Image (cartoon, rainbow, N blue to C red; front, side):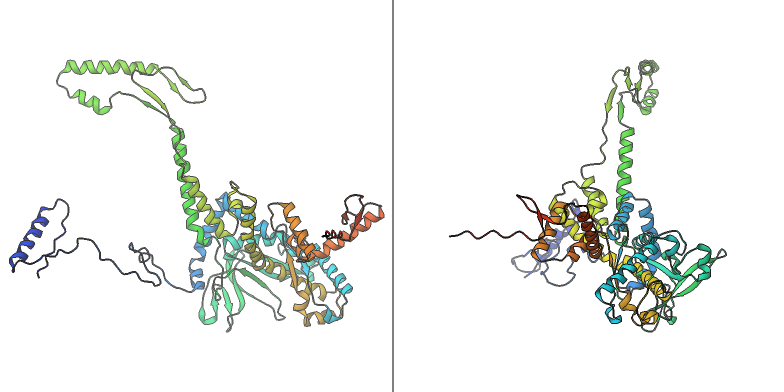
Length: 558
């Protein structure tokens, strides 16, 4: 059986059609008359559906996207400088990003993290009352130290809370924050009139070099031992106007932290961090381009808000008239248009502050235009770009764009509940390490120099350093959409026994010990002045107050 295939010709191609006809005739002359089966003219044959990873589409969208696998720390080292520069440039030139950074600071630390010491003093023979007094002394002295720039800052400019704010900004722009803890000797303290020697010197992460030498364990400016633990950091410094490199030990001989390096790793072998805006840089660039193009279009349409349409001929028409052979006819045309132009000169169209239209030339038409930009698709598209950037930073869309349109109580609560774990994580990973490192070094000095007494003295502290320096850092409370409903929910949990006062105080950003002591002092003052106790429940009906819960209603008799 002869199978004749029909050549698929392009539209309008006669040669291809003749070739197909000749091929058919040759097939018929080759043998007896048989049934001719024509092949389908369709395109590519149908493929059998398969279930496997990376099954591409018919357009080959996955095949066109090239990607490779590299170590995370090598990729960070290669692109760190470029990403950090772009991130800082976008933050400095975008009100949305600048506001998002401020929102991150407000959510993470607020006006500063509060110290909650949790030492294990039972080993040293402390009772519950003695432990409470010792913790109270530590908290009072720490507050005076951390809020004094001369005492806590090596440069003597900022409080510890302000330094942590800078560290959080660095973590967003650079992806990491670096600080060096130094110690001023008594001779160095004397000119400044300060008491403590523990100081924090916060430095920009770009001062931490990116040199790499695997033979000596140096990678991206961090020197590691054989186990991969950091033992030193290499910084760039300026001495007498000359930039030099200097290594700083990660810890001293007694195990005290000397360099604080906080970042959020992507891989377990990461050495340096990367900006949190790295994944949204392209999105931010597209948003800037969209906004600038839209603004330029709107301004252009606003400036040219009116058009004057005239039937007068253009320069080409005058050249055509000049080419006429009949000079009399040409002169008549020129005289006619000249008269109309002279009349147009006498008219005036003004669209400034004193808008005026005196007279238009015959046949002219004035049109007032309205700007067509931004179009109806601008807001949905730009809002989607904002959502992507807000998600990368770790803030809510409404706080990033200041757009609460369509928000409800439930949606606001859900939005906050989604972001709040990220806030707590950032607080623990980035902010708390700086507070804790400074606190450990400061407490070491306070006990060593006898300012804070301890049973067993400094020797006992060295033997129980980690147990005595353990602390928690309390941050601002979780934002609420309705304070009344949140307070009722807290009261319900306490009454049902599903929560504790410590947990609820922590949710409100308060220290439970401070709350109890303050309530006791205020209650004592109220009793001394013969005033009602505002902390007791007020009964209905005859009034009075009682700390006992109201009795349950008796069951109704059958």
